[in-house]
Length: 452
Image 1: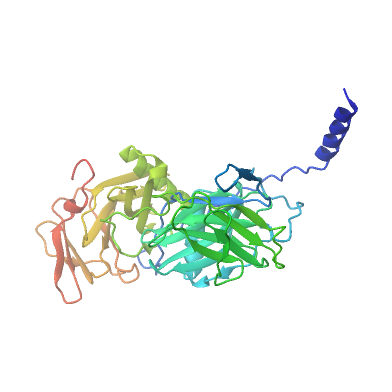
Image 2: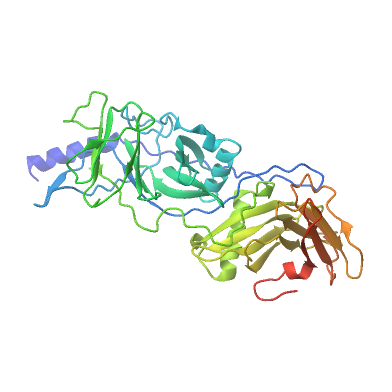
């Protein structure tokens, strides 16, 4: 072995001794479902939806090498290896440290009124036990949708993500592992006329610039320090981003590298045409419980779980402590079905897979099977918010006003129903006593394959 070989071996051995093992992640604690009683005031919640993919880039603290190809500047591909955050690992001054992240910038209103909690629940449905720290928030004016960039730490390691609000709740546009010493977060997002490039860095940086051709950089001023939004127009095959420090040092940029490409069809998928616009009512369903419900829906249609999304219309429990969730679910790109999912005190689950929901329905309903010691099942009636009164009657009888606690349930009515009932009926009235719906309950309880 040559002297050079001996020297290299000695160097590598000394370096290896300096590495500290990553700590074991702690298991997270799943949030519990909030109980709903008929005579209890229910909290209004935002709808929940499952995550969808978008194109984004994590930028480590390295300067990629340029590749000469005779056709202009290009950058060598740099693929970082994500690792969990180590408490004793030192971070460069402008790097994103998950344990001590950059301060929040932008619009906080997108996270108030339960917005941050519902986003956390949505995220934990996929990354159990994670803790979230918002970094940036804004309202995208063309669609009036809230957008949030956040960093998360948990059993899955350190990650960063971008989420947006929609009719069906929060949707995750970006979900990426966070590379060590990341100094810029870059995400290509859908836009009104053209896609947008969101660049988020430390507020201590001096300048963010974008070059469509990879060489001719132009600065874009953001509403907050360290934030820039760039329209992605024309040929973006060679585009690049440059971030300078507070001194504007061109020789040593904080970051210089390619911008992520936007792929048509990425980002938030369009909501189904038959998705109701009603608000979600009732309790906030436990994230793990909702995940089981949507898994059951996917299995019922023979679809992949990753291709399914859903919107919660009502969640709670009944007098027998059957816990349930009811709403709409769909395979991406398809119309929405009504669906329900309940679990009794013994842990036995009963899914309900309904047909494709009619457009603009006045009422939706499903039945929660009788629980232990219960002689009646629970008919869950979820009407359009415009409905002022719900009337129920058994066959060949007069209607009764139902839902004494109707106001507390924000218009949703739970009815004790005989499991053997046939011909029972519902009538729904608006504030002026106009009939919005009248018909047999059975017509609302049709499954995807049969009606009973």
